[in-house]
Image 1: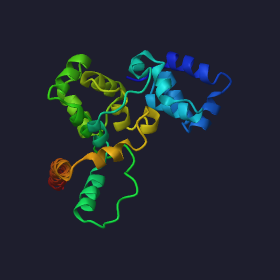
Image 2 (image 1 turned 90 degrees about the vertical axis):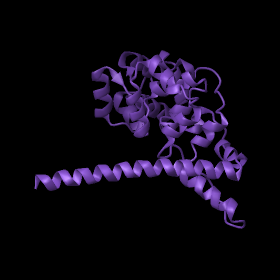
Image 3 (image 1 turned 135 degrees about the vertical axis):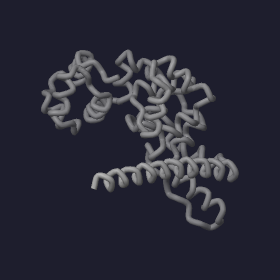
Image 4 (image 1 turned 45 degrees about the vertical axis):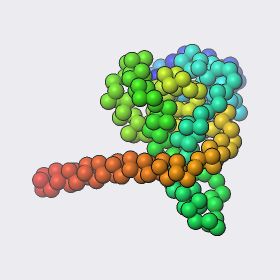
Amino acid sequence: MPLQSKAFQRWLHGVAPDASTADVCRISGIKRTTLAQQLVRGKVAESTLVSISRGFNIDPVQALATFDLYADLRGEPVPPTACELVSQIATIDLLRAVVERSEPGSVPASRLSATPHPTAVRNWVDAIDDGELRHRVSEATGIAPQNFSAHLTANRLPPELAIATSRAAGVGPAGGLIAGGLITEAEAGWPPNGRKEALDRMTLGELVTLAGERLQALGKTLKRQEQDHERTERIWENLG
C-alpha cells in the first residue's frame, strides 16, 4: 500500500524543509512528472521515499519506519536467519559453489551476485514457510492465495505484503524488502558477508540438493513460458 501523500509531504518537509520539488527530484534522480503524479493521486510509492532518502543521505529503513505501516522496522535490525541468507544467493552462485567444491583447485568466485536475484522473492518465502505461511498471510491481509502466488511467480512483492509475510513467519521485517529490491542488505543491517558465510557453512550435499531444487523450479518456469509462447504463436497463425 503506497504512502499517503499528506504523510509523505510532512516527512519530506521534516528532512528537507528548504528543498523545492525540483531540488528533491534532481538530488534523488526521480522524474518530476513521476513525483507530481503520485502526489496528485494521493499515494506515494515506497520506492520514491527510498530514492529521496538515499539522495539526502538518510537511512531508508529509518525513513520507512516513521510511517505506521512500517512500524515493524523501528528499533535495532533483526538478524536474518541462515535460511533467509541462503535464499538470497542466486542459483548461478550455488552452481559455481558446487563446481568449486567438486573440483579442487578451481578458482573461487570473488563475490556473490548482488541482491535481488531473479527468483529472490519466491526463494525467500519458501525459506521461511513452515507449510502454513501462505494461509496465515492470506488471513492477515485478505489477499487471495492465488494472487499471493502470482506475486511470487512474478518475483514481485509489494512492500506492505513483504512486511506482513515477515510478521506471519516470525522473522525480521527486512528480508522481504531486500528480496523485492526495495532496500539493500547493508541498509537493512544484514552482516556484510552474511550470505557468503551461510553458503560456506552448507555441506556439499545440502548445496547440491538446494541447487537441484532451484534448477527443477527454473525448468518448470521455462517450460510454462515455452508453452505460453507456442500458444501465442498458434493464435497468430490462426488469425492469419
